[in-house]
Length: 330
Image 1 (tube, rainbow, N blue to C red):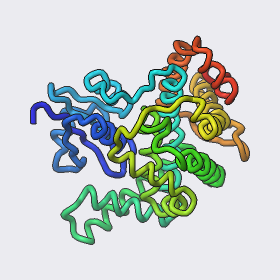
Image 2 (cartoon, rainbow, N blue to C red; image 1 turned 120 degrees about the horizontal axis):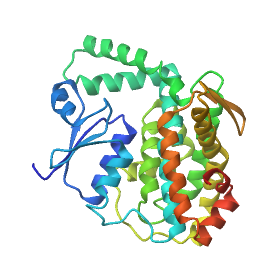
Image 3 (cartoon, rainbow, N blue to C red; image 1 turned 180 degrees about the vertical axis):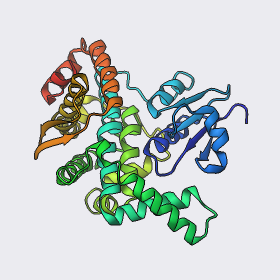
């Protein structure tokens, strides 16, 4: 076991599922450890923050946050690569990974903890995962505690009575675009998963296990749902495609990113810089208001640095300009 990476995670955590899917794809020796009270002491040896996933390396180091975990592992296990050689597609993959982590999480988290039926389902699953040997009474009590705690956290992703209709619109607009894209391919950029697949699929997979979004995906996005399940144990089924072959259905997804995610990202960063307690940004459907998120401002800065380094590629600059992404990334 000394050469095995141990993943402390949860089946209800998209970021945990993301890291596990990556390890499966890379055939990285790993052990999945469901985060529960009985492994608290071991978990705390590797965690600085009380979050999952936390990965314990064979050398005894602890790594947290799904993107840094993957970036740590990728040089150690470079094949099969999740990064296209083409500079434009490589950056698009990075962009979609960030989009999945931040915007996709907003869509999933809101729906999981907004409607009473979703609250009840998610809290009960989490209670059973944390107390697998509990009595029905103990499970019900734990579920009530979880539900009370999690339904009070919607403000972190901008979930409110005012934004609820907008978020539902954003979710199904994205599902429709992805459904068209996956009707003719297995992964975002072709026959094999890219970095972006891991970020976005995990969020939509988690949405699919909840009543509201799960029903919507089954009815409106069967190809998207197939992709979510495929990404639980992804494999290399072919090469990355060329932009010319992807453009017909990938361009509208990038336009969506430019119209929804990137304006929100820029407004979030500006609000943090100005020390504002909340911000409003005009998105399709109306004004979207929420408090700023510190972590995303940092990850947006990383994404902008990546773009600055890659923007000299003429194809990338053209694609980002034509889809409307460029002004938000410079």
